[in-house]
Image (cartoon, rainbow, N blue to C red; front, side, top):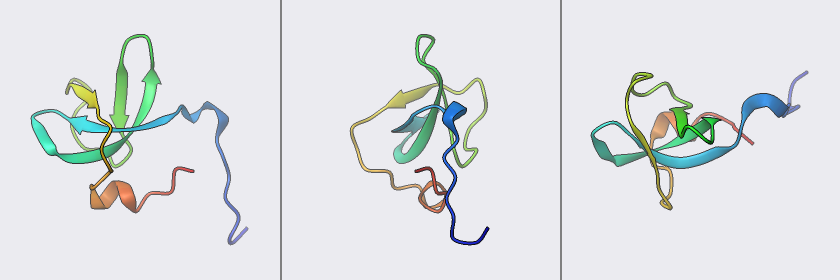
Length: 70
């Protein structure tokens, strides 16, 4: 249906953070496992083995900003 947003309950929460060595680009990170600190960029940046860090900064990744998460 056009114009209707759907919220996925099992999607996990979204936080802002960096992926790998690039600390200038802040992505939307989907929390996969809060206890283990597993997070992945919603735009697909990085690899599953890249370290992610949560930041209290505004997201500035153009690809992440183009993806509706809320």
